[in-house]
Length: 289
Image 1 (cartoon, rainbow, N blue to C red):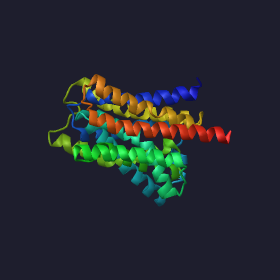
Image 2 (image 1 turned 30 degrees about the vertical axis):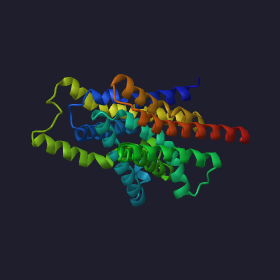
Image 3 (image 1 turned 30 degrees about the horizontal axis):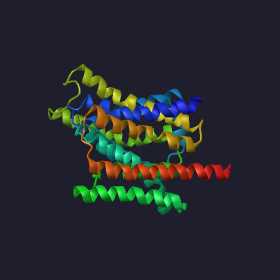
Image 4 (image 1 turned 90 degrees about the horizontal axis):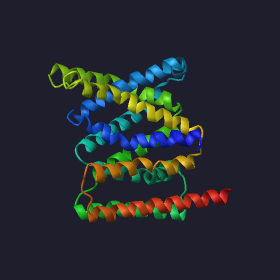
């Protein structure tokens, strides 16, 4: 396999194994974990920009429009990160995987609604199957699978903004975490003053994991950015299902979360949608070739 494929596999595998990391610090409140994730991610990204001498290039293109655009992206990714970490440590890994299975199909719908893209018949069928799966789970349980929908919607909208945003992935993520840096730091300081801070109070292993959140956030993103420069989007589109598949398997097989017959039916509809979507994409690529 090419280096680009390995980079993509590494990035998606890391994201798929994230539940293990967050479970190791399950005793720390999710909001503090996200505060540290933002804090250390920004410092790590700022360091990468400094080494690659891209700070001047970033400053040169800054404008009020770019700040507004990336502030919205920052808010979406912040909500996504918090929801994911809270859900993992609350025992909802299986539902988080559903959100990331749904996400590609939701991105397609956003492309139609916002960007005016057109869908082929089988793509509409895939969207319909995924919607049927969500509706089935809603009626079977009497409540929306809100964790999955929040994750899918926030990441889908985040991806839409990144599609139209002018900055590269490294500069963009640095700006996003920079926007979140001040409120995150203020919260962590306030928690420390209130006697609720976890950093430096829960043992060196937990401290290392909280500080390491920046590294485990930035490394997969940099690998993903490297993959995008080397391989077609169609390949990354197939590989992206590594992450939710690993999350699902971790939830069911490792952390023994319940996976009922009702869930199986709902998930099966979503999985069928992904199969239809993948087959349509393969047929379209063959026709183009």
